[in-house]
Image (cartoon, rainbow, N blue to C red; front, side, top):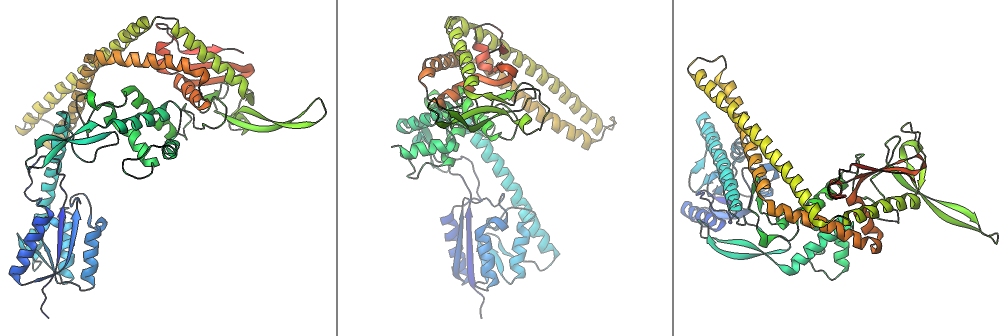
Length: 538
């Protein structure tokens, strides 16, 4: 029987938004036409075709590529005689794997052909060497392509252009009027106001009302908030929204970042940072650190940031029924809620403090602290607080700039000395080998680049004084808004306000408290006063 049954494999992995040249990355229709023409010319019959869209032959190994595995299975069953591709790099570009994938087909009686490079044979050692060299070159080209792609994406973002892909919730794609080298239309982002309102609602529910990611999804599903995708709101959708930095008005690609684009900002930087801190702290449940309230159920105000002042163990809520006898002699059960020292009750730590503290008594004392803070902040003119905070923050940023510039200058000096030593080594005048110096130079160059980026960021921080004033005003206004909302707020909202203001509460015998404020509150508290902790005695 004549062996002329052909299986074709087509693969493409380009991102059409990226503007770069890559002659090997022919699109699927072009590959298919080339293979059909070649098969007709050779008198072969195409009996099967497989297509991979957006699959990297450089990053994804054959064992994880469904189409390669499917073709292997067909080969085992003798369903075809020839594997035909446009170019051999369509099979893959991994130097330590792809040559052996091709060899596997040949050893299993399958001829492997390329429309551009002919048949790949393994008749002798020279064939094997040439096969390996071909894919080693393809691997190198893939790495170069990857670098070009990352560089192109980074340059696009740094110029304030969208790098491509689907628009996130809150945005829509609009034609930019620009074309890449392949004449494909490039797009920019634009805020879609009706969806942006949902983004703001998600951040508000998460950062201000204390709803968890799943509860936010449930809230949207139970309301009249339709998901633009047509699907139900899910945990992952909400989490992706909370993690997306584009909402602050900056485009990012790897380490590249665009200038601030006001028309893209949906969420303030402060609220976004608050969301990241809550996400981080909620993921940190196993560590004995202050965090946002993990339990939003019940009427207890403190959860997650109240500790025993004697042994340092976290206080946990405990509810038990206590029997009371009424005046008429009837007995009733009434729940008794207490904050219990976990270390003492479980005998984990030696503790001289109380085993438990009455919940409503401890909560009322902390509420008194919160209201006192509100009163004292409102007692200082806003302009005085903002000006003082501005001077302090600007001084910190300038000090950081000076420090990073000094470190960068030292590293550059070190790098120059290493390069001079390389020259001496080449001339045979150095005690160090060229290979050792090459490694040291490479490490120093990487550190220099990192410090250079840190300097540039520090310079931007110093220069962005208008943004700093705005941020400080926003922070102040948020604190003042808490004060007006607190008395009428739900217990969930109160918990979030308290945990935004108070970093840690340590409780000692006889309800003596030590309250440690969060940084922002400490900086605003009493305007210009230095306030670390507030000791309070019942």
